[in-house]
Length: 109
Length: 115
Image 1 (cartoon, rainbow over the protein chains, first blue to last red):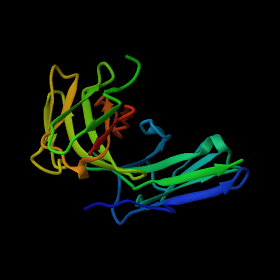
Image 2 (cartoon, rainbow over the protein chains, first blue to last red; image 1 turned 180 degrees about the horizontal axis):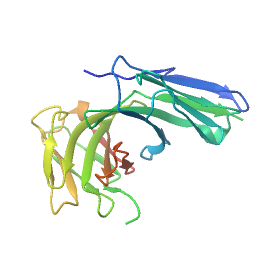
Image 3 (spheres, rainbow over the protein chains, first blue to last red; image 1 turned 135 degrees about the horizontal axis):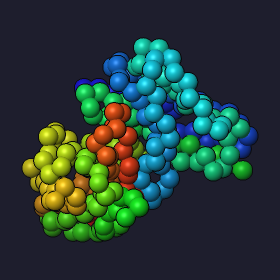
Image 4 (cartoon, rainbow over the protein chains, first blue to last red; image 1 turned 30 degrees about the vertical axis):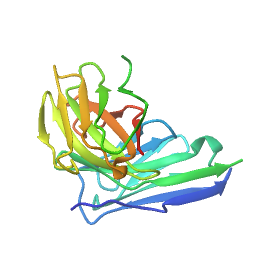
């Protein structure tokens, strides 16, 4: 069974702080996706990382795929209340997406 | 439509009753997925359709759960003899089926409460 472990599960920070969310597995993934989900809505795709060591930036969000394609991180710089939500990583293996359990982020003004 | 739609948005039912949840994927998307999400948790894969066929039903938790897809479009997930542990948000996603990395577009979900 492929598992994706996300940490931390919960994160509560003040506006302006930086944070990093981690997504780890013992399995190798073809690619890894990050989604963000707000209450009452479905997850929305933020980014897909494909190549080991790849770094992608989306405004204040930086996504990195590990060299061995087993782990990934999401770093948010100067978090804002609008960043509040559930962040999910999902790894592609055998054509199937395996989701982590999510990181619940709360950014207080 | 512009996105994936699901109905109903909320469903409250009594233990033992059957429920049907509906998903309308993005027009032209050939792949359709059903997931279950418990409060604040990640997504549990249930079943996947490519066209009208379901190559992967491995995530269905019991034989009380079934799903079908007709005309390569709308899908229904049926839960028979509902139990309290079936309470969750049921999410549907679709994909063009041509994207190498299987990026998925999600609907807003159906929140199911079994009393």
